[in-house]
Each structure stands twice: as C-alpha cells, then as structure tokens.
Length: 258
Image (cartoon, rainbow, N blue to C red; front, side, top):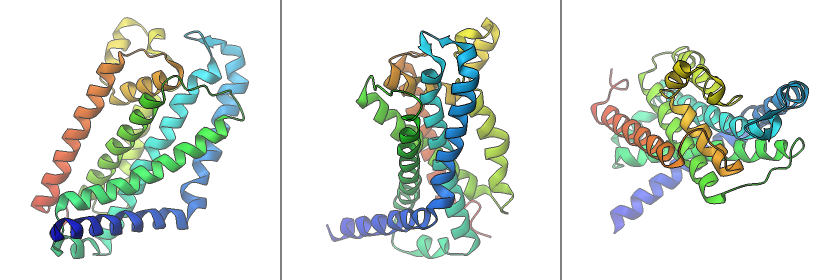
C-alpha cells in the first residue's frame, strides 16, 4: 500500500511540474493557439466559407470548427511533451527520475498527463473563440470528450517518442514540420473526403488524423465520413502501440543512455 502511495506522489509531482511549467508561460503556450484559430475562422470560415457554401449539409464555418479545435489540441499535446521531456534529457534531469524508485510507466503517464492537460486547456480556449463565430451545438458530449482525451493522449505519446529519439533541439521540430503538419492538414480538417476522387479517398484512409477529426466532428455535429466505431478502434490501437514503444524505449534506455 505504501508503495502505491509513493507512485501516486511521484505521478502528482511530475504532472504538477508539467502544468506549472506551461501555465507559467501561458502567453507562449495557450494564447497563440487561440489567436491562430481566430485567424482561421476569419479567413477560412467567414471570408472563404461564404463562397464555398455548405459542406455535408452544414455551413462551412460550422463544418471546420471540430477540425480546428482538434488541430490545436494535437499540436499542443505533442509540443508540450516533446519540449518538456527533451529539456529534461538535455539538462540531465531525467536521469534523476530514472534512478529513483519510480516505474517507467509512472514517468510516461506523468509526462503524457501534462501534455493532455495543456491540450485540454488549449481546446477549451479555442472552443471559446469559436463561439464568437458560430453557434456550437454538441451532438454527443460523451463522444466529444472521449475523442478529445484519446487524441491528446495519442499525440502526447508521439511527442514523448520524438523527445526520446531527439539528440538536438532541431530534432524536435522535424516531426511536427514534416509529419504532423501534413497529416493534420490532409486529415479532413477543411474538407470532406467525399469530395476527393475514389483513389485519393482510399489513400486518405491511411492517415490516422482523419479518424480523429471525423470522430470529433461526429461528437460535435453528428456527421462523419468514417464509422465512429472504426475511428475509436483505430485511435485506441495507435495509443496501445505508441504506449508500448515508449515503455520499451525507456526500459532499454534508448536515446537516454550514452
């Protein structure tokens, strides 16, 4: 029993450190996402959206709201963990955690929990911004919150793996620039895959972000290009795989032991 209390204390310490870290510089971590999303709403939703008309029976600005919220959550969940863990590794703080009587899974959950906390806070901020541009009516609160949490966990794990592999600060920007951004923009944030030719629809099904965006859109609007059950299974499978990879890497000391 005392051992589990120690684990809980370790988890609380890590996640509190992570939350304090990004809240202390909220002008750099929370505010930019709200401003960027407001620009998206003005340009794509208001100016261009009026010319596009409806998308899948919804006003274009209403259609892109779920994708823009989730895009901000994805980016910030990933960025929080990759920057925090790499900084701990670069400054040799992580070694103190690794030699402490704390299981690796507690370390993973702590850092991922910090990424999820930032992702959710940014999600709330972006949602509040969206209320200035559209009347947000949530179709399913349960699905909406579930997808938000699962997506944040998934990309927080992705950020952790990137940080473990990274050797320099330049390495932590490669994946967001060349992998994360293309997948997000091509994940159905601004369009329905039904608009694409058959071949490109099939290609799009290989993009994991597509399932997350559509599952979240189902939660908010009740509309999705992907069956909701399939989308949730895909997200959970990715979480299990990335979680196992993270655990294996910490156990082996990959990217940490010199």
